[in-house]
Length: 444
Image (cartoon, rainbow, N blue to C red):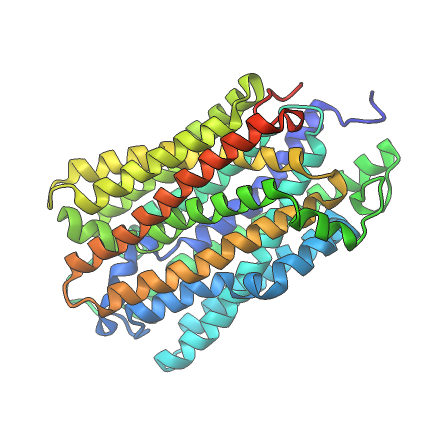
């Protein structure tokens, strides 16, 4: 058995190395979420971005992913293995983040700084998504004969702790001050901190690469973690013909868009809806990632032990729907409803991913696992690109900040309704295809 599976201690050390780059990525991606209100008035910052410009910048994360980058790089992941491909894109993630920091601090005119930051965010986004795909692929490889859902839940928990840190720390790095015009260096403080986290992530990724190479030598795989069956481009067609792949992908794009796009504009939504200051809004929305720190591993353990993954996805989608209904229709100026909505959204944000991601290795062969994850992320980013831009335009065009917040929430509510319907179809598919074991506990 020692020749076919790594020791348990080595598995957990490898997981510890894998989570730090994702922690840094999540922090950098969400570093402006709780101060997004600054961009409603370009005069508030020397940077000079408005809400539509910020929405454009945020949407840059998904551009290269959507226009073929994710699919091509997912294929490279299966062809070259996680070590080579992952190293390239962890480096791209850091380079893109450095470009964003340069754009913010260089003193360019708003249009030029936005263009440069947009390009940096594009490369950061593609690097982050392929790095995340490599991390997920690596967890599936190292925990194939163990608690895979728990390991994926832990990775998700630590990554979202990066989001939580961004939501809580950014209002302290960029302190709210009415009437104050924020300098370039003040606006850039979260980016400086995030780039430091990425430096630590690169070092630990290097340690994982060394561990993975040693593992392959011990189990006799060689070659960067390639699977025993050779990858063929024709296999991609087989993935695209798989109806369960489309159910996973559609549920992913609907559910994640209702949460990730929401987080990007959390301050602009929560502050007018519940009449709270920016710091309180930061703590309120930080309940989402903090909840996943606790509940994502717990729900992952439950999926490993008891199965019923498609039912967890349905329940999580329903909770997200209830949360956005509260955010859209709860009485104005009552923060208790905002906190309740975050509790419900936090549970949903833990339930769905804990069951969704471990289901992917059950619906496709190992040799196309990297490609499949990349294709799912591609569909996800197509939605994120669209809904971030739409949310920014809704908020930017609305003359009334409260009405703009409600209008955006109606969009998110519609996404959740569609997510619930998709989850119901996935439950039906699991019943019709018991051989896939989608609702079967993971053997340990």
